[in-house]
Length: 415
Image (spheres, helix red, strand yellow):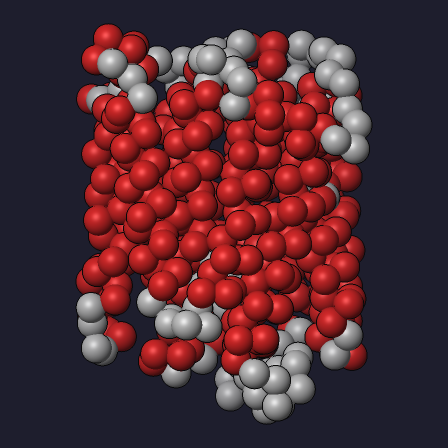
């Protein structure tokens, strides 16, 4: 690693933090916005099933557009560099937040969908940032550097949901509304744009021409599952992402319906989870990476995550949930950087942007289905999305354990 690389990593990590701070602000707002019969976006007489299905569709449109946008940004960042694509992604994200804020104020459901669609398509900043980290990392430093990215995620999820919950709650200040967090998210994204423009230094010194078209996302998804050296990893990532997002995207509905939680209280929960993610990826990831290879870590963390999620259904008082969340956060916090490290380590140095885009495509496709399915099944019982999440994560663990014979699994331990 060159001497200027540690200095180059810092603005990338800070960019991820600001981006996730803006993203985290949105988390506590969506479910109350659609379930609130008095001050929400839908008419008071709208049925609960309709509310959850529209909410699911709104969440899904973000992932659908990200499915098309992320590989485009990944491939273009290989061709033109990381910096210009980061700037374009952040500009589109800022406009998306502004559209959503105006849509809430005018009760324009179409503008809400347009804002989330634009934000999803232009939200290629994370995959581009991952590519930049890969540019600057060798095999030894990859788990640590991707752990720092995970820590930036966690910090964003501490402050973002906390701020979003408070800013969207009129009981905190009378002039706070559901739209207030989106105005702040737009402002933060604009600041992030300026930060990248001024402080970010280009990291892609191995430019390559990767074909790009409107069907890149669909072709890349098919390509991901045809790649012999990455296929099982991508299947595992799909199942894991599907499961964990069945939990995260509709856990708010569970809390609103079972415990009558407000957006402020939901924000507190996700801030608490974010705190544990920071502690995990800031304090544990590096130490774990020194003792165990990524494959060995995933054998344990995927199983632990799948078995822990159903425990959320047992408490009759919400305070008990705070004793369960650390196990979920630690399991997920150790899983994500090791998955990314495995994918990056298996890919060639010259194709990091493309492969990170492939991974983002798989994750975006997996994130598309949970809100559509959970938005339907939650109308039957609020517990079903969490049970679905557990089943899918356990399936991901089973694929990783059973798809390799002992020799091939040991090879993954040595990546």
